[in-house]
Image 1: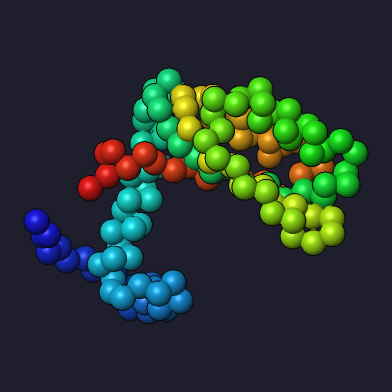
Image 2 (image 1 turned 30 degrees about the vertical axis):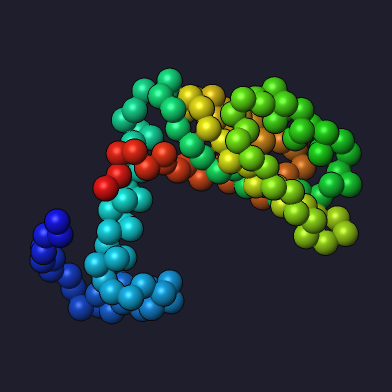
Length: 139
């Protein structure tokens, strides 16, 4: 059941919000607000849960595959945490640069440690671990 709520915003803030929503393709403000709330709930889920609870995340890496043994180091980290790697996607961006996207699942502490290890590997040009959710606790 949907419930209607009202909020008060400054005009300039509302204009910026509407512009952002148009750029992102939202059909209405309600959908955008729901997504913002869910995003904060996922953040809270990660902050408040025990580190032994099951979590999911996405690790994203851009690196030069010609960099001295970097690809081997990244593969080694993945093998050390093989139970956490649900799926991996490797894309050749150009003759030198690769994008690797890993779906991670397991104890929160384990997948954060793995993600941080990958991102901080010397030679990674860009890396980010994005916290996600199993969706069980979201409406």
